Length: 72
Length: 241
Image 1 (tube, chains in turn orange, purple):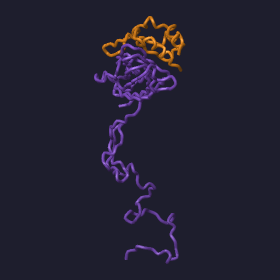
Image 2 (cartoon, chains in turn red, green):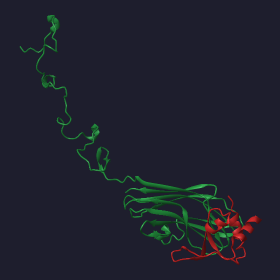
Image 3 (cartoon, helix red, strand yellow):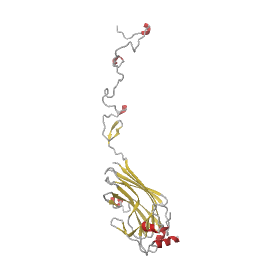
Image 4 (cartoon, one colour):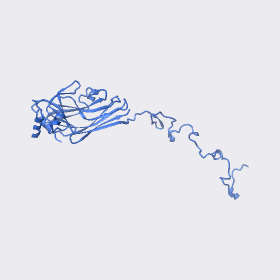
């Protein structure tokens, strides 16, 4: 079971030009898993301290992440 | 002169006790004064109670649904002590990690699995939760991980961050870990935590518990909860009142 996806995803925020927060459920190795197993958050917490659900940054696509995964 | 003994041997004769003796020998003479074969009927011939030092209980009655308890070295009595017996039991396992990833923000998230559902038989029942959690992280910089619990009552309220809701100073929940990475993609060892929480849901409706986590990180990285190659267990037990 690989952690390549999480490692590849980090490359998108190494320079902090893209900011994101997400919860990944299990291993992501396919586009279907990329589309269905990730919850994206705004990065903000509500008054109860709960992370607020948001949307995926446009720059982070399956094609782009997969390209980074293939480099690992 | 009173006749007290008969010396049959001296007379050269015998008496057949089965056929030649009638009547009963009084108790004053060492007999039973009775022809009955049951000499003591405990139900009708005995009164009072047998004391504890004599092997009895010293009791004539007890209280329904209570237990017998020594209240002194030689005294027994009914007792309403709580047994703490286990009622409902449910467990669920999880193999496969969650990853809270990113470089931005904070806030608790709820993990869909594993969860346990308990339906208490009494509003006075408590629920004991025991959950194993594997944690590791990668990335750079200072990073903290907080854990808490979500409680959802069927047809009722959902309470996020149980520990925090019970004690507002418990901002980091029931447990946490601080990671300090020094280089990019440095993997910390996977560490197992076994956490216990006692809840008082005060309901007889189904109650579902889930694990919550928050990753606070100053820089980018991944926080891994659970593991792809190991199974963790989440157990819920109803503790009867």
